[in-house]
Length: 165
Image 1: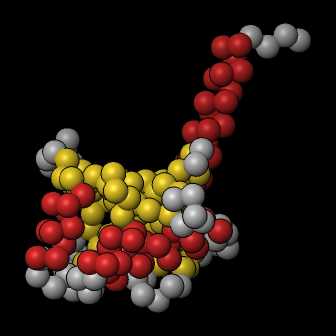
Image 2: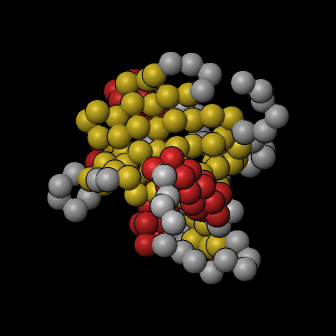
């Protein structure tokens, strides 16, 4: 039986959609500073990327909490850009200055971490919550430096909950 190119593409799209749905249902979480990751009950898979980028995200959170400009400089790409759902882009230097001026961040919790490899880059998405129960959905794009290290190239930040767009 001959399969048309359209049928093949539809099958690939269904397979990709199912894979993404499964990935969304198998999150891992990491507490900043602890370096530990845990998976949802019944899903014992922790990928190497989830571990590696969970640790990078924890280092970034710790650098923000400690107002460690030197560590932030190492972790951010020279082309870093921050974008919020509520507004436009913030360039690297402005974001760094803002991080150093912010009042104490308090405890943050990173949950539902999923990491996708896309060519040379890695895309991590997760929920970032605070002590008051407020959560934000974060998508980070990490780029390799060529020296075996990774730097954050872009961060997309959106509130979670009942907000409508």
